[in-house]
Image: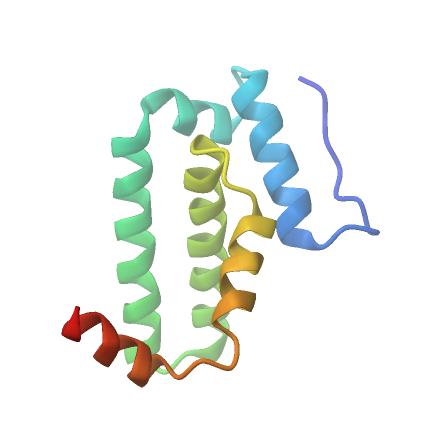
Length: 114
């Protein structure tokens, strides 16, 4: 397996995504990401649910360090799901940018009226 490193010039999410896509395109028998991808979306969904629950649990315990750890796991597994769909972090950044400056309350109210 070719070891991939984080490019310090890239943002961490983009670097992780690049590695995930590499594993998607060139599976490796000793890669966690490859094994998760090979199990399919249902396994990834399960991991996302598990990690979400762990974030909530860490928050209920009011453990800052544990919240950081669990959110990192959640973000990582979210990137794996995005990699399955070939959705890039930039796609998400673009969506968030388009929402910037718009009230979430107004947007929800307008959706209900449609």
